[in-house]
Length: 131
Image 1 (cartoon, one colour):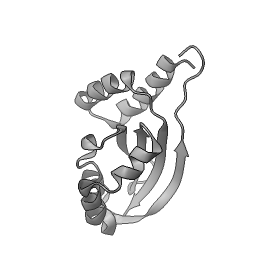
Image 2 (tube, one colour):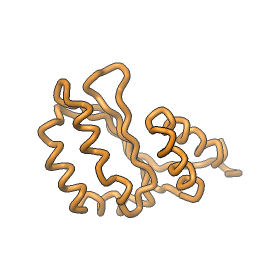
Image 3 (tube, one colour):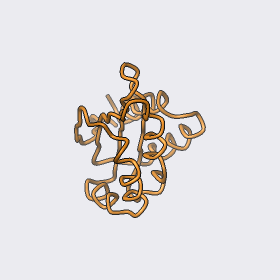
Image 4 (cartoon, one colour):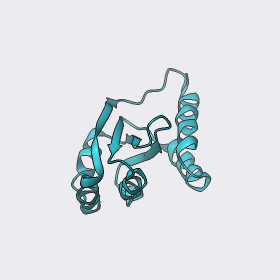
């Protein structure tokens, strides 16, 4: 898979998670980006609180330095679960984001809505030769 195919796969996933208006902006950003760190995680909301948790987690995510993509999707098999996919310039940028006032406020606001966590993986996005 070359870089263009890799980006297309990520954008296909984003298309399933984002409205069309945000997808166009993400596509342009990813064409120029070279993500070096990624996270994929499942989070469980308290019963009936998924939409509220998604709204909180989505606040201010477009203003995190070094963040290339922050996607939140509703799990189709579990009405209380969400998936979060993050792409970053570096692991350090992700670590620094956790200290931002807006992120700290979202964590504090959403903590009581979180019932638990599922699968979590850190990864390094790659593109094969010829990308």
